[in-house]
Image (cartoon, rainbow, N blue to C red):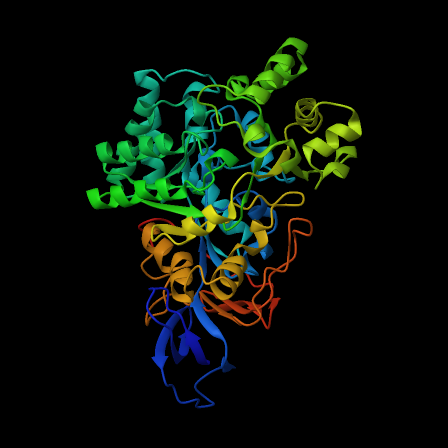
Length: 528
């Protein structure tokens, strides 16, 4: 029994004080419960503490690390009890037939490359591998557009033939029937970037039939962000799919203050009857693969051809010029942030490890190179396994987006190297900075954003809420002590103030420390 907690139940309704009894993996009773000693194996005095449902991360990149570190410390210690894998069209299921080694190299900058055998090929095989490894958190998985496209067309920059598209649709239908929660794409990442609207429309028509969601990193989050979101909403109008925009933001100093225009698109879509949503991490800096700084056309053909282009002096000069000046339609992070605001964060090892936490401008000065040459050389020397953090957003826009009712939590946490602090402390930052200290959100609204709202989006009727019969995914925290605990300099520290985390009724965090338990489950859409 958890006794005398202030309960924020995930619905957005006002908090209330009550006791909560947990039996097995579910909540059995809520109210004033007599503390009969022989009725409970344990009674936790929660006076002065806040009890919430377990937090749900709608944008996780733990797909690979989960197999070697199933304790999921970065997530469980911030109260996250459910994660959604397969993001940005670059997840691990299904794998592209005959191209697994190429794909492994392709995604290493995003997911890392831990020493393990990629023995799965299909979604059921990947889910079984996750179950064999065990997990502290519950895991849900999206199908990924990238490996689906690679299966039929490799890394070719072209429209699909009718037979190729039909094959992709068949693979999508199979994956959805196997328990995927929807389809993701990342329209700045190859090969997803090579897809036209017709391809996305055909695939999402299949997703709509299964009541799955379409999770999208849009083509441009800078000057063409409205048009990019509009493309996805137009697809939803045609197919009936439920669109979910990943890590909603507005990047580039010239666009700061325009988040209201972006949010108006969601308001308008809802008035039409579209079921739209987005996730967001609560920071003014983004993070992704360093290779995303290189113009998209250079990625055609895959990593080997990109490497050949980066070794070619004429092509290097062309790409360096394009990174400085931009290209029509291309989201140029180089100029959106500036070289002094882009930091190397994740390098596996070797002599380049020393450049972690240094800006590209700083590294360029130290090496006597241009920032573009630093990017090219790091990618070649590290086999593309490099990640970065870029400061390209305004705090005002972050807070404005955070207030919107369509929003949900997404850490977007890349875990290799010295990651963006969002990987360890997104939930604590929302609760400490934006709820307690700055009153941007009420506690009830913030918790709904991280629990009930994403649970409904995923169709998890028995999670994301504190109610009788719900799964006992619970977080007991101290709102007076809650704090991020980390920073952009010291990123891998856990939050303070999260005292207990229960997953399916089992304590994974107890008195602020991990128990080592692996009580999470691999979830399948439509299956209990």
